[in-house]
Length: 337
Image (cartoon, rainbow, N blue to C red):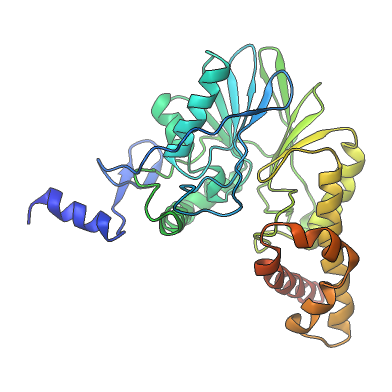
């Protein structure tokens, strides 16, 4: 069988071909084959220099080609800083096209807010455009990718999009941010925030969450640390989330938040996220001590006013709430030892 025919057969069957990226290590690259381009999605302008590209769908599908999280960018006098790059090289290329509609300035840096693949797989496009581009993230992001997150996320996104992200290379960050740093880009200063409480594993949504504050603008790119969506609690902490929201609601009371999913909003976004997690946690503690199992807790928790009136309208609520409760039960059990 000829090599090309063999490779086409593998791709038609959804089989990955692992290669080694010369700069960044592991890559699940489909050699010369590539999925379809991502259609343009216009950027939403938040203020004079801050934008995000809002994904309207809450989950990856073949139709949306894996575009279900919000990339963002800030235009500075030195160039453009991008916050999160989407789920594929195709989405990354689309982000670059939207940036060019707003400015001719180059992309000078990328920041990945955490290690879930819908926030960093698009790094590939930015390295293709500029091999020397600085890509920042928490050290846990680099470690996760080193430990095989590239394999997992490319496979995951390929399955859910029916191979629409073919050609994407798992491209790790090359610079580290731990929180507390300030980055200066011409007329713009970005301050990096990271929640720290070792008792809760420094975890909110993950242990790698970075918040990027645009100093002077009262705008924060918050990634998935707060959102109106029920998706994935397994890598985070209920107690960490509750404590972080309590801190940030005071510290950033007058700010606008650009989340990784959904619309930008004021501190009400944090309040809703806090109330959702606290409602689950307080009820899990109560019902666990009464001897109830997680599946017995769920219908009772769903009767809480906030759940009925607010959270029940969020994407993923009906399909994923049970998983959130199970994670909370496990965290509470672990806290007893």
